[in-house]
Amino acid sequence: MTAAQGVASRDNPLLVRLRRLIRDPAAYRKQAEVWLEGEHLCRALIDRGQRPAQAVIADSAWQRDDLRALAQAAPRVVIVPDPLFAGVSALPSPAALGFVWPLPAAAVIAPDAATVVLDRIQDAGNVGSILRSASAFGVAQVLALAGTAALWSPKVLRAGMGAHFALALIEGLVAADLCALRVPLVGTRVRAATDLRRCALPSPCAWLFGHEGQGAAEELLARCTLVARIPQPGGEESLNVAAAAAVCLYEGVRQRGGQ
Image 1 (tube, helix red, strand yellow):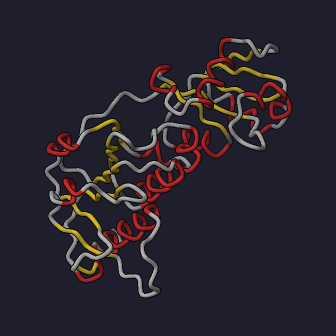
Image 2 (spheres, helix red, strand yellow):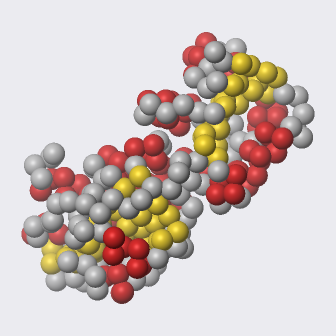
């Protein structure tokens, strides 16, 4: 049964914790919890069979039957005045509903799983978009090397649109940790000799996507079984890393006959 309570002070310990989570992208590591703001993320969590620890909802949203029912998926609900909710929102237009969810325990690298490896990708929007593509195209795990944007930060969560809940996520890795993988590593390079459309992609594999400006580290590219280029007949120097990831992951699905 859900227990609901009202909070009227901005100094409430829960609200203090939430403000810390939205201001510090890595605060979730210390607090072992994440803040999922907005109806879409909250529904995505429930749709994946997960349950939040707590819901926080603005007074105005509590009056809506659909949002009240969604909030009551949590065992505890905190109802706050709209101005207080705005203070724990990372959005220009506050969503009026959010879940507090315990940070999942760190996964162990699955050696044979379809994988995406992120090498120092720093833009949170790019990271979240890649997670979304990874989930859409059947990737099981994402391994983030040190220097990559914090995977559970608010901006990455928003860009991921719920993909986090479908993936095993491991971050803070170093290159040596990739030795645990038994699947081939596959990378891309603008001037690679092999055209992505004309190579037989291994399945499953681990796709390597690198830093927005520098690309993947040479050390990692040297480990790749295959390095291919994405054809760009329009003549641009390179694709945005999130767009390149979507192209590569789609090509892998296409070669497997859409399965």
